[in-house]
Amino acid sequence: MGNPLINIQNLRKTYRGASQPSVDRLSLQIGEGLFFGLLGPNGAGKTTTISILCGLRSYDSGEVAVNGFDVRRKMQAIKPLIGVVPQDIALYPELTVDENLRFFGGMYPVSSHELKERIETYLRSFGLMSHHKKKTGHLSGGMKRQVNLIAALLHKPALLFLDEPTVGVDVHSRRVIIENLQNLHRSGMTIVYTSHDMKEAEQLCTHVALMNHGRIICEGVPRRLIDEASVSSLEELFIKKTL
Image 1 (cartoon, helix red, strand yellow):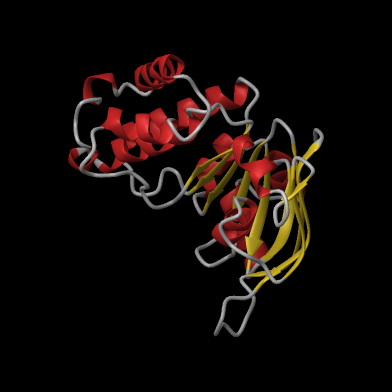
Image 2: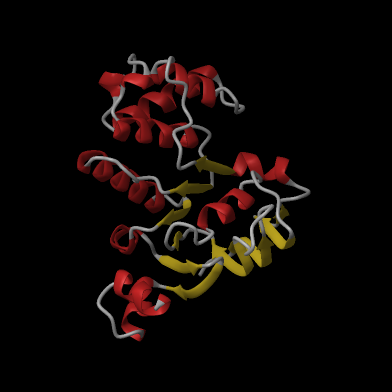
């Protein structure tokens, strides 16, 4: 594992009115340059953990740092380093693809000329150039997810957070998203990805942590974890670990 880009120590988060914590004394380090999968069923605490790392959720106790910056005190230093792709589509349906991307890209210190070039580059990479004048509300669900991903990439983040990026998409869109994520990782981007799709995670991730009930139940290189447990897949491993 490379240098720890993310460092979580004894993180605990309980939502108001809940009887059990969503994240329960979680400790985790994620190294630079990894494609890291935070995996588990719905309700395991994956989205809560990602939201805390992005500064979108408070937490009860523990220590959380990104690139050495404490998320409670130094979020302004963290924001330029990260791209966030939420599970819900975060686009304006009445704006075109191009208008959405210029709006979100304009939040960062990127010149208009450079932003235009980046938008065109990503649209071509995702095969969406012919759709750039369409209102996003008229796009398919898979295309919306692709545009959602592009919006998080325009400032060229060092660290990309993805929360269930392929949930509910068609086969073609899933392939496009996966191929582009693999290219981004090969180019040196650190990616932290949540999913309950173990087959997809096994294809994508260099390292994984399996979560259940707010805790890490095992962590490591997927193939090594599979071999050590004498199972044939991450899906079988998770079933075995959560019985």
